[in-house]
Length: 131
Image (cartoon, rainbow, N blue to C red; front, side, top):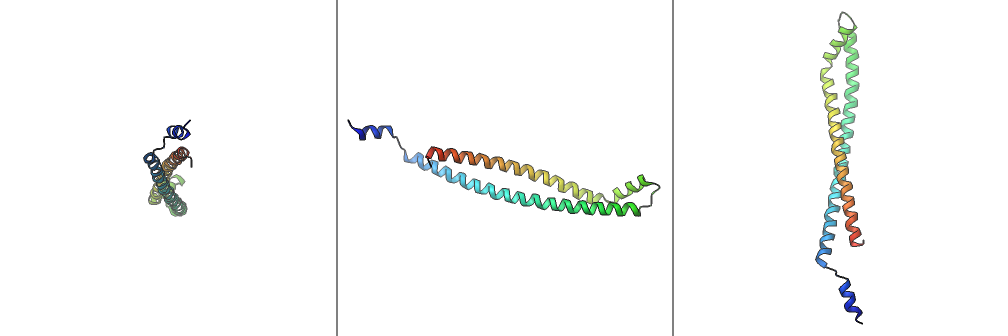
């Protein structure tokens, strides 16, 4: 009975494949770090645009009320139209900020999905390497 011979035949360890797996793990960890940093940047931008939207909304409402009360219209409907026309620039800012928030949230969700995928791949590789 040659135990050494049987053991070496059963365990077929290839160093190159193991090295590639650990290299892939390193690449995935690096990508996960990049994705986490990207998520932080996106969250910062979302918060910035939400603040800008809040400020623009307050300025819009203030200017609208002021324009409405100072407008010389025949009736309230006419005064509202005048106030809305005078506030178009602030309304455009609000629309822009809302759109930026939507786009950044979409990008954030895509990045989050990518991060989850990298986590799964890393876990699979770790399990294969028995780490």
